[in-house]
Length: 255
Figure 1 (cartoon, one colour):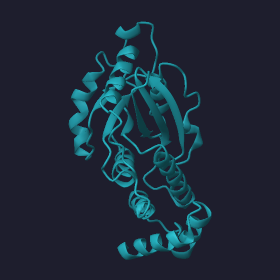
Figure 2: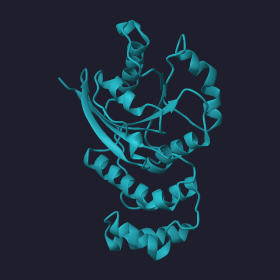
Figure 3: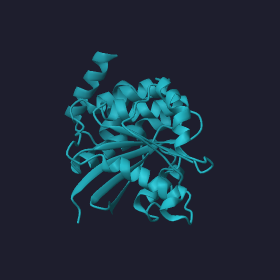
C-alpha cells in the first residue's frame, strides 16, 4: 500500500551514472538507456515505481555539459526546461532535487548545474541532496564525504543530505556496497513526506530561466535576442504571444 508520493528531479553531468542511480533506487533495471546519449541540455525522462510505502516519480534530467552552451543549445534548453516544468506542475510540484556527482573533483560545470537547478529552476525553494557515485573503490564509501565535504562547501553547494554510492551490483546483498548504497539513497528519499511540493510560478519563470541560462552559459554572440528570441519562444516553446511580450519586457527591464 502506498501512503505517500514524492516528485524528484535527478540531474547531473554526462557520465555520473544517473541511470544507475534510478536502477539502484528501483532495485531493478528500469532505466535501460542513459540520457547521456541524447546530448541535449534539459532533456528528461520520467520513471515511476514504488519503494515500500512510497510512490516515487523521478525525472532523470540532463544538465549543462559545458559552461558555454552556445547558440545551438540555448533555445532547445529553454524549450525542454519549459516542458519539464509543465510536467511537474501537472504532477503537483517537486519535492526534492537529487544532484548526482562523480566522486572525483568538483568542477565549474558542477557548480553551474547546481545553480541552474537549485537557484534558477526552483528558486532555492526545494531541498537538494547529493548522490556521489563511482565509489566502489572506497573501503568505506562514507570516507569520501569526510574528505571532500569542505571542498563542496567552498563551491557554494549546500545540501540537505547526501548518499555515497556505487551503481555496480554485487552478490553480498544488504551487507555489500550495492546494498548499502540502495539503503543510503532510500533513507534520503524517506526524509520527504510529499507535503511540501513546490510549484514553479508561470508568470516570470521563463524570464528567470532565460536570464539564468545567459548567466551560466555566457551571453555569447549568436544567442537569440529581441525579435529572434521572441519568435523562438512562440514557435519552439508554443507560448502565447501576449505572454511572450511580458517576458520580453521583463528581460529588457533587467538587462
